[in-house]
Amino acid sequence: MDNIQFGAFVAQLRKERGLTQRELADRLHVTDKAVSKWETGKGFPDLKLLEPLAQELEVSLVELLQGERSPSPTLTKEEAGQAAVQAMEQGERNAARRYLRLFQIFLWVGAALCGISLVPSLSLGAYLLYFDLFRAPELGVIGSADGPTVILTAGSPLIPHWLQPVLTAAVLLLCVILALRVRRLERRLK
Image (cartoon, rainbow, N blue to C red):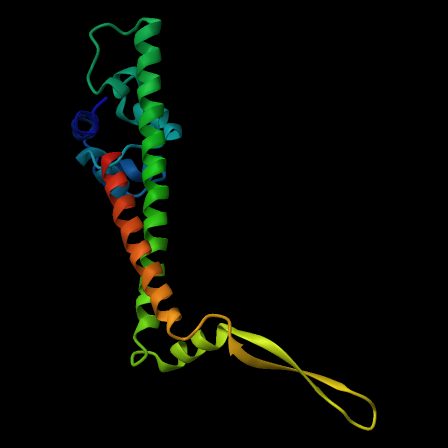
């Protein structure tokens, strides 16, 4: 099943019934942007929406999945099974694309944070806080009349100062590379 063919069929049926995208969306409890994505081939409805969509457009579920009107009202078991498998595969691809998009956003945010931490003039407070987070705690003992008192103080850095920007730049580069690869994978799933 082709998204473009499916979308054109949905648009044709919607117009035949005299419905706007918003009216169809309201009846299915989705946004008009979702209906627009279906009709332009940029998206596919969730599996749970296929039957209500077919009912609203007054076609059978099989006709909706095939993207065309069938001359015969029934299909063979193989044709019906194939149409159902195609619909499930399309739903799985759409879900995978959504998760990839979220992961890509996460990677870009990580890259931005790394980039900001590399430029101390933009955010001196964040830069100083960043370097203070990598300090190892030290224990100091002070004697008094009541006995020894233990004081926890910040001491030498866990990571040398010269290595911190290098590691941050490496993480920045890794986030950018992964985000671009995830973007390419997401586009391949369309």
